[in-house]
Image 1 (tube, rainbow, N blue to C red):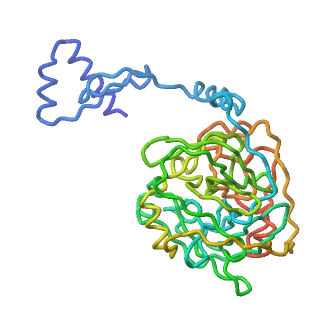
Image 2 (image 1 turned 60 degrees about the vertical axis):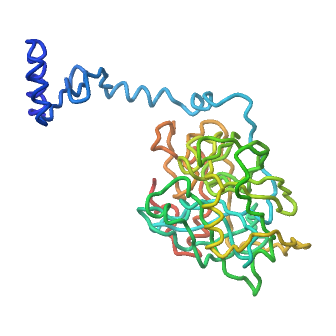
Image 3 (image 1 turned 180 degrees about the vertical axis):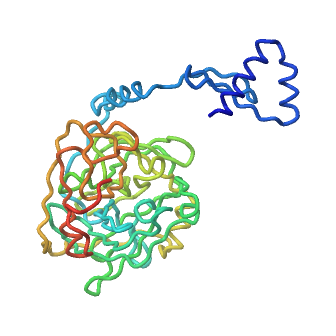
Length: 383
């Protein structure tokens, strides 16, 4: 601090006295000069030209956080955006449960038509992070709703992500394919059917994205349209896609009863799927996603006949209570739910406060405790 202030005084004296040539000479021989009037708020860098700026006070920062309530943030959304609706679920879409660093979280995933009949697609950030590595205890529950597992639970045996995601978290590669093991001698696609993987289809299409919010006891879907956000990234508008919807499929020609359709994206990519409930993103499904699919064992991905009968409904052994959260006061969120007892933010307005809406409770801690030995909810860390 002392050195900075002395340099600042030297530069101001040189400018006021007209000694600019000497200052330029100092720059020419490589002298680094940093100038800043800390208290007054003026910030300048002589090496890059003079810049005007303002040092924002701590009081002003607190006022900004207080101003941007959830209601005010929602008011910034474009008008006429549809709202997602809850429905009874589809056999090809389900909830993906896992642990990372000892903490439980969940995302959304879907079965894709593959040669092996055992592939599930989701967001890469749901299963791999640079700080935490690969997720553990991965289990996929297709068609999950109202505390039931109508098609059973399927353990993940292999995770496939792009090396570009693993090394640099490239948002255009935020896609993962999971191979799940058989259950009772059957492969998952024989039980649920599979979505066709759609690649190279362009950016603009009518779609129905599907996702599992962590504040409800069933999935939501929305009739909307995808469009180009930027090169390599798609976007759609629809309210009420919150925590837990990461990895949710964007389905063209969706039939909820049979679970058929073509998946052209997943909630992922830019901002790991989006910071606001009304704007969601996906990597563009081009040659990179097709190659990843083939390397994961997908083969050609040609459509196969869908099963004609639904599997017997199997009730969960653990009692799981899912409580709906109030619609008002929901904060901006990250789509991958990472802790089962959230820190309740009164505003949720700061970028770092991607929390669960106030008043909701996490419902998978009972399941995780019984299956993975996760601590009881009261002892889980708050995020």
